[in-house]
Image (cartoon, rainbow, N blue to C red; front, side, top):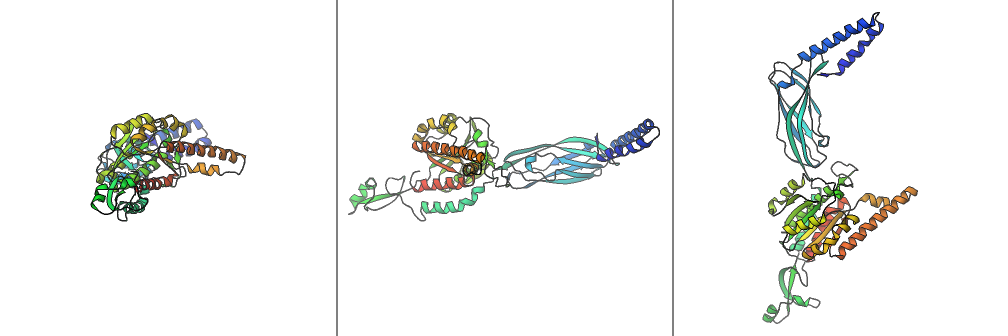
Length: 440
């Protein structure tokens, strides 16, 4: 049984006669009995929610920031009219509008109730039931029941860095031969023969071709295609920190580092796939959270966004040894291993740095990290004593990042450290530079 605001108003109004009545106790009993009888009659005459049949239409996936509609088909199989409210209990992060729907269903009547969802979080969002509140004809009281109507939507990564793809593909076409950029000296993939000029690497001389001609002939090389790119995303505790501004909602709280990393991974994977490279994906902290290996190029993007959608940061310290071991088990031949993590000096010193010689000895390693723009803002503060202390702490944090980046480079590791919005294009540019330089 539920009571409405009208019932409370009636009870409040009944106080006045009691206050002026010569026999207050008698007046109270009479009015309370009348109100209780009215409530009982109203509940008895209210249509029963048990008679409602609710069916939810199948909801498809949507990208973060996009909206979609879920429809409830409601039918009244009872003998009385059901008049009241139905609340579709989606989580607040789905941005459901409207939160509740008015109901007025005669016996045998059906209605379609549409709820528009605009999720603000990536992942699987579920709704298990709806709540129906049926109010009697007097509008004082009614019945309430929870009716199962399960539904789930999968919110996919938005891939906002897609806007950088056309310019990077144009650069890739230049590297790949439309406007050839040839690499002198030892390269990876043979391109053509030409005459020797001063400054060419003597190791590029083709002695057989030289013997057949009167001039010294050298080989030219271009970046190798059909290489393997393994993108590893760290889903440990450092990936939970929010940085920047949420680009889908304008929220100054920002996206988690994990979401920025996934967006950069999507741009790099798409670019590398267009370049003819094989792309694999691994999300790991202490265990593998998601993986995509051996996906065909035409199906790569769809499989990546599907695998990335349910991944959430784990509030535990990542196990670098387990991560490296997972890469070694799955990747036998030499590859470009791109690790998206944070340049946290304490975590890297104890975890990744001791393992780098083993990893970089077998693969080309690139570490990409997201710099918090708030730290740069704090480092510029000089407004007062508190701001100066904040600036000193921020500058120390930046120096620690520079120091750990320098240590990584000493081990032959490429490092990209950029603000959230710039990480994806910066990582794509570094990949193209390595491609053009024949280092892949």
